[in-house]
Amino acid sequence: MKKRQDIYDLYWYFAAERQSIFEKKKQGLMAPWTEDKILQEYKFCNSYRVNDRVSQYLLKHVIYNGKEYSAEDTIFRIILFKIFNKESTWETLVNAFGDVTLKSFDVDKYSKVLEEEIFKENAIYNDAYISCANKAFGYDRKHENHLALLSKMFFEDRMQDKILSCRTMEEAFNIIKSYPLIGNFMAYQLVTDINYSDVVDWSESEFTVAGPGSHRGIEKCFKDKSKLSDEDIIKYMYEHQDEEFKRLGLNFERIGNRPLQLIDCQNLFCELDKYLRQAKPELKSNRTKIKKKYVPKVEKIDYFYPPKWRI
Image (cartoon, rainbow, N blue to C red; front, side, top):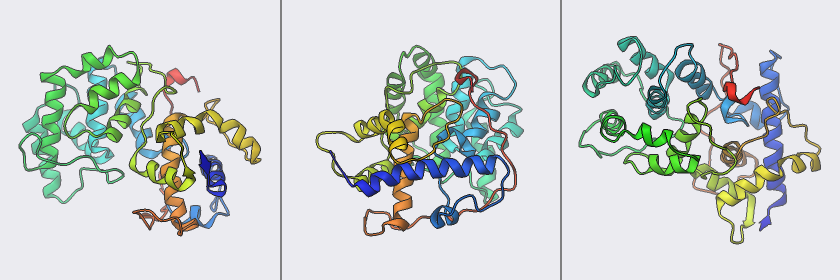
């Protein structure tokens, strides 16, 4: 493979600098946390996916909220939350039904509650990534099709039993992606989130899927990939992270002793693509601008990690 060396080095710079910003914010230091004007002005995801606000909400309110849930309820709760990927939608459902479990789930009742939110002009989906929207189950409304999908997964097919018997993340990915309304990228996000729980314990270092933003970042980073797939490239970055940080004299601050995982390296290509729209606009793709400016959040996050990570 042939690298664009300056862009390749920017990948590692971005990972280290974005993590440094995270650590400074966590310590309560005052802005600016970096001299990089692009990172000051625009919103970027964290180097570690698990540190992003929605992932933290998932961990603390959906998976590990102090209550005991069955393994099948845990998987159901994760998938339901991630389909909408929005904290306020989750809270609306919890307030309406007391708790979100398979026992409380009813397509018509859930749909009515969400319809009321839409009538109030409240968004029920997060726009961070776009979930597939079509009339796969015959409904006009996107959320009705998604609720019908959940009913098919958990009541008709008992997908949860299949997921719990999977030995690898890839096996579970193939089951989830076989459903309508679920693309490859979404299926990868879902198996990653299920693996945050303690109902499964799959290796994170064996399987990855490059999302659309990651494809763009990889194209900008490499002149020629030879015969390597984008997934091979992501695995290469995962395997060489320590030596590359050392080569460039970058101090990358891990969370605990946890290196960047495959999904983090995948996400970093997506964030690199965004960063390059400002830093190297001559490297063109089908996206030319960064959509969101950075807006500080008032509420602080008390960071939490899956207990099995032992951080």
